[in-house]
Length: 185
Figure: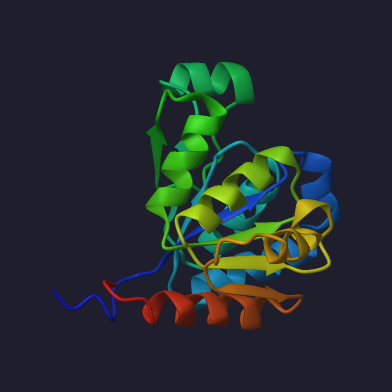
């Protein structure tokens, strides 16, 4: 089956802190719009903050967005994190907790893009690294995203394609190109 024109699935990773998302609102909106313009399906951890802000902007620009929850049911998700945003066309309730959800989220994506983030985002980025998913780092957003390239450079194990840019259009274009050049897609 020829997958050369299939939609690329990109997981938007980053801090769940709404204050971070608010501070980066314009940049995250630009990233969401770039993902939509590239025809990407956007996946997030559905935990609020950066991922949801990117998904909202992507959805407003016409992208299909899917949430991957760490909880086993809509009721549990809503009780702990509040109601899911209306930007998601569908939600997957894993019941695996946050670290298990991270595995499902990253392995369901063809590539990941990160903005800001802390230890949870680092976990997602190392899963992407180990499973050789192309990684996009939205430079200048702070957190682990601005430190990850140096961290990955210190690893002996060869990593996946890595792009780091402040321009969301350039970042997304490089990610999509890296995915399309991979054998098997």
